[in-house]
Length: 334
Image (cartoon, helix red, strand yellow):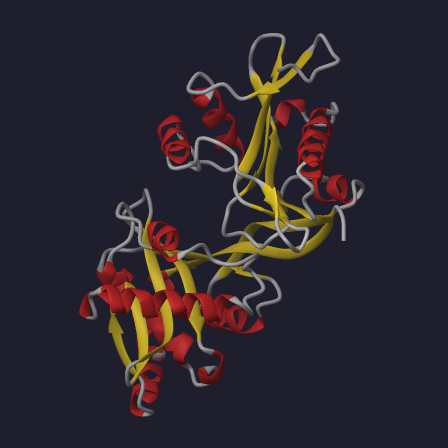
């Protein structure tokens, strides 16, 4: 299907597997190391093969469906990409999207055409809200989408800690003090079993509800487990838990990265009625200590700008903020 009105640019549906290699190259220009032909193929393999979008009894869009288009120049080079999608577990009415343009071809109307296609698709499906992200380090990206009716919902940015400059002994008493209050620190490796994973999932569901960096609901347990405990870069001994009796009240989690000396903190959360007691800080200290003993020289994480408690913890440890993205929303219908 051709969507182009120009002989110099073709906007068409993605063709798989033929487009994987060039698409991965484009995505890695925006976020180095973010994609490969293999990872794109694996992601597609896990997706339903057919759409089942429908309007529920409340008049809101539910189910699964997506559209993906690429922009090619006359030389056959992929210079733009866009996708709109809905997963079954996303809040009814919501549709997500991603889009990008090759740095050498920005300012030529390509992004506008891709975004228009994505919005038209969302409107055709009778979606209520279209969400996306734009990078905060790409010039004019935020004004571009704001001119087209999007508003900022969150600003999430990376943070980095040089652990060679981190003095763990300075904070060691925090873990001891919290433990003396009755909180037990352990890992998922010490509490194996389906019941523990279910309790961990419930903890993530509860703590994510008032996390400004979280958008929409978490996926069902089985899908969440694939994402939260991936076999390639997660270990159960890297899921640090704060436990009060039988109740899971806090967690933080490490992921490995392509660099063996760089560890990523994937998520940190504490039950609302246990906050303000130093639990999150103690959990992050335990994870930093483990990373150091595992040979790390750098810790990375990300946080939402308005998440004041987590921002305070990260800055107090010496994390330095870096690049990030804006989560943007456009109301399509009420």
